[in-house]
Image (tube, rainbow, N blue to C red):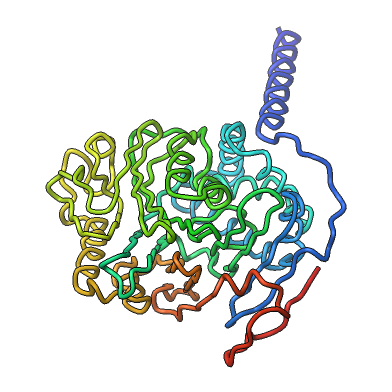
Length: 433
């Protein structure tokens, strides 16, 4: 009998070991080879105290430059990730190794829907910064398992002083982990794709705020839904894909509609050349498209304004709304919810300044609807003229309380020695690898 029990125990150990090895292999897919990188392509500079990263080349080169230029800041970003895990552990009492393994599995499920160039860029980032690739992969799928509360609006035509398109986005998320300490403006010039600028964080190659040099800008809003799935293209990478590939609103809409989406999000996408915008309301399997002052917005809580488009969490499409748990949850109306107050606050701000909205007025609208205590960054794009303003949280102070720094992208995409000289000279000098 004892011999049988010993054999049984040994068999169980072998099975558990095999299962553990199989699980590890599943959750940690292989990677491509390391490459030599032309160190002269990328460089960084500081403008008004904001780190600006210029990244050029192939996917691996883009990532390697990012990591090598900001090695300490990438490490700080990984520390912020660990802080988030510790918060999750304290809230749920789930062991940290289980949380990590869970995110590894989410990445593995998302992997078939992540474009190869982004996988390669993550590998370059890990090699350039000398950090663990597995951690970077986990960071890029957090958007599939967490909730975010944001706002976004676009105004143009009769709403603005001169017809230009202004697109605002508040990114309201967790500020306690210190991710704001790694904020930077990223200027990409990929070998294949559209040059674009995005405000984001070192250690991440996905973005939620920015515009490309074809005049397309992006913003999103979390919209928690019952129709979700973990196996999907992560949000940050999907919006990065739009910035890098969409020449106009139609192409942006096609990319979002046909992506393998995961959780519920609303998107506000704008085109500064067309002077037009779209709201895309989504779940994993449903997609709705709205234009400015769209007659399809027939629900009683919708607010329509000519030459303006704005969203918070609640969907205007009845099918998308029928799956939503946010904004008091369907079938309840969203009145009184924090998200609806942000939605209505945008409408009130646009109406109050209608016809006189310039960048200062647009920033005031952004500030008025930012979520206090969680406003991680706030970005305004003059998508017509390719100018971007960005503010970032500082410590426990919300982004909306901080200075909004102005960046002229038409100038910033020029080499520093070819830019027009201004009295407000940039602080510091460009640094190359």
